[in-house]
Length: 388
Ligand SMILES: *Cc1c(COP(=O)(O)O)cnc(C)c1O
Image 1 (tube, rainbow, N blue to C red):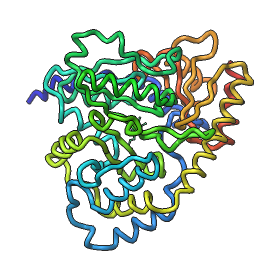
Image 2 (image 1 turned 30 degrees about the vertical axis):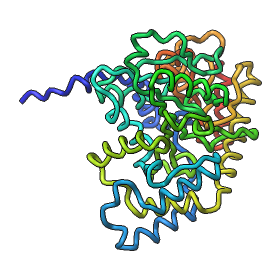
Image 3 (image 1 turned 90 degrees about the vertical axis):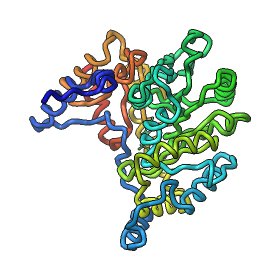
């Protein structure tokens, strides 16, 4: 039989990292001492009290059954209270909060709730890949809004063609931003809400890095903007905040009709999050929060070591105020992000992510993740010195 995959699968963008992935695997196989600055996953363990809570809950056979589609009451209440404490916003836990199997799950499923074939999904670019790929899988047409350094990595709305705007149903955006580490201002968020209301577009705000911030910066929720509740849903994740990437737990919150539509899609696809993980999520959200402060202090020190070290080499690298990424133009004399990443791997045994992998607007940049120890970061700076 001829196995023929669907047009939508064929339409997914090509995987750009095949060459560098192979080079990385070969380097590791050769026993070379690789410093991997390519990983978007916290390197320190989940705090012990959260792990303990899972162990307790896993032993209780009450938790071994199918979960409720909409999540446990206790988790939705904990999420609502956490958001109230953190952003001073008011969310009804029954209608405006929906637990997710990681925020990626909700991001990937929401286009199915709102797109008809040919509808447009606006998304900022460079971007977390699912905004684009999930839109294609739902037979939508992704339309990239480039984030340029000269615009503080905010998208421009004034040059989107009318025909595109008329077909646009969703807008994916992400602040604090992966990969650029840009942070949103209130005036920018007001502009987004105005734009969405005027054009009948649903804002899908990805807030995965809302708690990873430094230098007294406090990332905003879109719901701190009046009127946002008419048009927006926000995606949150426990992955980065509580070092729980492998656990798969997050949530969507916001406009009740939008949340209900996403819930309807999910009811037909999954059967909720393992109850023991939901209860551990309650522990994470309601327990001591100093783990967040501690992790941020670790990331800050690593950031200072990397950015300070590279700037001393004459490479002008900006210092991020949020996320655990450093996003920087290539050093003078380099233009091609994949070629530069290959050079760092070949000559310095360092893995970085080429900007072009996040979309065409990322060309000329690389992303370095602060998910290795300060000592290893210092070692990386020493090695880069020899290459530059
Ligand atoms: C890590 C990340 C997520 C979170 O994914 P989970 O599915 O919650 O683990 C979402 N958006 C962006 C931009 C990310 O980098």
